[in-house]
Amino acid sequence: MADLQTRKTDAFRYVEYLSRAGQCIAAARHSQSTGAWDACAINAVQSAISAADALTVFCKSERSAGQRHEDAVRIFKFVDPQDASLQQNANRLARILSRKNAAAYEEKAVSRNEAEYLLVETERFLEFVKSR
Image 1 (cartoon, one colour):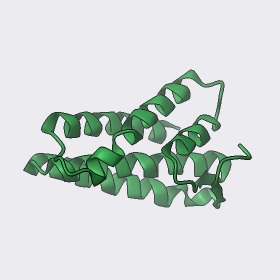
Image 2 (tube, rainbow, N blue to C red):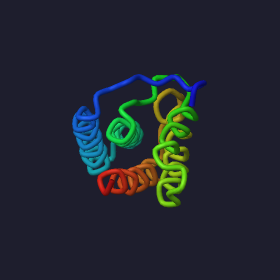
Image 3 (cartoon, one colour):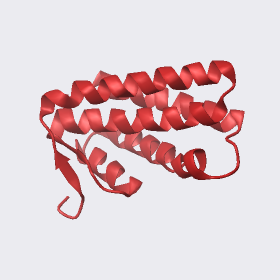
Image 4 (cartoon, rainbow, N blue to C red):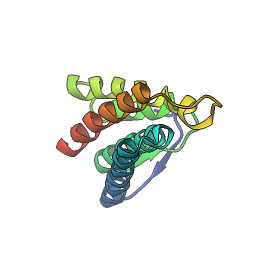
């Protein structure tokens, strides 16, 4: 993990990241209910990022500080490399993060299907993180 950019964070701060994840998923759900697909997708992705930070802070007292989404996934995997469920959810995180650029920065609007896919995947990811 030496080549990964991380930031040391007190373990008790996981609560703040988990709270942020909850706020963002609530905003994503609200956006879904109003048909604001871009906002739904963007908030879902941000919820997943905050949830990942919550778990790595809780377990390792550090979070990703790099610019690359792959690094955040690698750090998440290091929480417990032997845990198959955690590794499956790391892959889920990778799928969610792979859509961030399209959702947040591209000219084309996010489709309803894409936004709802991100919402469902992020809700599953968030439930996994809360279970830990």
